[in-house]
Length: 309
Figure 1 (cartoon, helix red, strand yellow):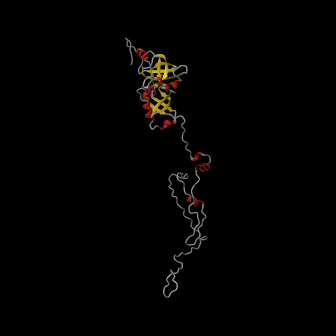
Figure 2 (cartoon, helix red, strand yellow):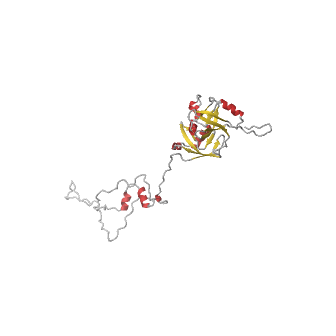
Figure 3 (cartoon, helix red, strand yellow):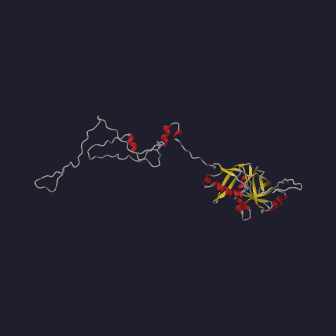
């Protein structure tokens, strides 16, 4: 809203600048406490509205709150003009930003801020990462805000839990208005967040040492290591090579194959033994089944013994 004088010249708005005693929303006697606590707007007395309407201010009404004793300031909007005379009620997170206590004096000055185009926030807890769609939650929470100021820590209520976010950066100025605007939003890493460490095999100076640290010691048992007898009477060679022992180790589930090469498929089979040369070849004894002897309980006529072939 703009006003012009009788010559058509634009009238410069006169600033609103006064002091009030500030109190948190919990001290407000009304019933709409949570609506004020979850946003970035304050409640002012009715006399402030009478003065503002006569000063030809720029709408929407935006204000700069300053704690001169603590040298802190922030920006906000106004929700209603229903507070007691000489008092203003502001959200508790805003009182912490301004380093104010109950009943302290705060300077309130009307302001005109540029429209926001970009903002960057830093969550103050890693619990903010548990939200599935943080941009949608932030967009819904900022509907109760009118301004953003750099270095402010705002509070967003979601699922009955309060998440605090620090305003790291806003454009095109250090303080902007977010009423009816298209704003790009970015998030920085939350306070206390640590990047997961991915260790690579080539990171160590000594590759052999890194492999030994990454490779787990095989657990399990060696199969078929007991003694036994063969039907043909031959002796089994119990001396196994290192490769055969490695193949017989039961691999523990969940341990990756660090020797895997891309493009190759490995089938864990027993490697065939090398052919035996003529010098070390042993004579094979022919094996014929049912070569033993036996007796029958019933003797055949004319024969005393029966041989089973």
